[in-house]
Image (cartoon, rainbow, N blue to C red; front, side, top):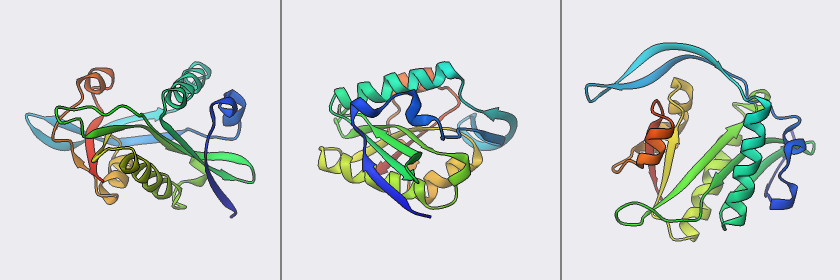
Length: 177
């Protein structure tokens, strides 16, 4: 497997970039916070992106780059197979967080270490750009949370209310840089 990683530029992020990317994820169990405690619950569904979701993603990633943020991709045979994005604006009461807004690996390439490489690239970039913590509003699927925990993420000390309102079932995490 010949993987190549590189930063993406605004002019190359378009729907065509994702033509070989498979978002599909079969979710069976998810973490939920109930009465102040984290528990695992059955919550079966298929997570996939519609055409409208891809168009929204393209808009968001282009905005991230235009605002001085970071978008980094993993390619196999010239096809995008994973990507990560970090926003450029520090936030939080101590202005210590930078927002990791996306981290996705194509279904056909999961388990190959791509997520780890992308996450570490995002962490390096965030540290170089003044962050002391990455903020992650992460999908609550057991597998997704296992990945973030393996990377060293913990529950965020300070929740970003915009993320909580947008995705109330996400787990709010942080990673010290």
